[in-house]
Image (tube, rainbow, N blue to C red; front, side):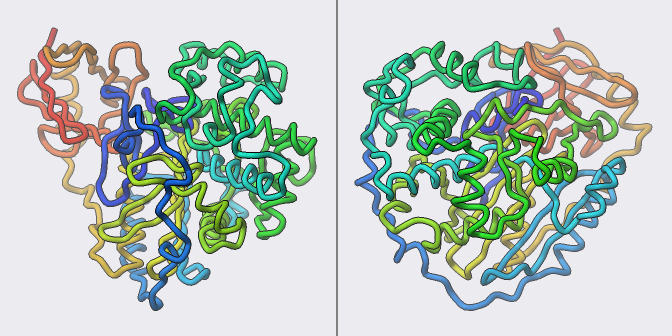
Length: 493
């Protein structure tokens, strides 16, 4: 949830597209790995869940079994491991069975985690929203709450509470300020937050638009949904999750890890992979206290359990068809805990997350009965390329094996990095970018944002692959920043 180099915290904006690699990062501060905010995500068009054209019968047209290219996947991950480009775990399932899984660990991974690589546990960030929306819809099915109930029933002190419905919270149309966008967020994200402090935070948020008028990705809404579910049931979120989803689906390593005192959760926490930043070597990143995001991004799980969950959810084994329809994304709009992932002509459904240096995506493609998950705890490549590789393996498409041996030598890189170090400005962007070397590693840093490592990809280019950033060096006083299909020239100040 703490941002890496200005990236969003457990998803300030959603990232959906799998087919195309998108930018997502600091200088544009708009996108995330794996895709961009969907068209109209901040439009003023009102949407009703009743307008959804997606039905289960349309969604679940599975085809015959697939011949998965596991040898190519081994070569792909061997290249990442050999060059220390990526840390994390992946799983690919066909017909509910695991056909491929792989875990790449940092050298200093704890002994407890190394002893259980078949159950790699990660923070899943905003994938938590999918579980929160499922819990809420279970309560709707049971008649304990209604989609038209308003927030003032539980929390009258929140701005616009009489106008904000459960439906608006689910569909990111509540109109409240996103608490992770406020500057003070980074002053408390590592601290424990009890209910009273969380409520005080929610009551301090301003309204950005009238409920229902627009759609804007909202961590605030899902924090609030988790709290409302606790009020309705009289049970902590952690207990609801275990009783209603984790236990029925045999998800033994899926938890809401706010209470570390219990024996089971203590075991999970000791097996949790830490997240890392690349600073010339892998270094552990700050850790967000799970009590801060709550229902918006607190959960931990394994790739196989989350992939299985989305398969079960989309096949109608968790919610009734009418409830699942409420969660499904409309054309060009955000769903309620479910995003649409296009892979060429195919459509999958799932969610993704970003918290600290954990980045996660998981989903289910009805065509071929394919489920997948990619959980990263440290990355120097585009995680979306890994999503594409897994799906290409499933559907028999070509897999492009990365070739990191084409990079210039260490000596060449060091000489160029020293030559271009300095402060740069652009006539086309309000931010300045500093380039500097620390302990032999070139970094970039935009005005008011965190530094990010740059790796030489050619004799005249440096990249930060997780965000799709490429710096093309013209000479010692000029470079062009390429990101998200755009190019911006910079000159030494």
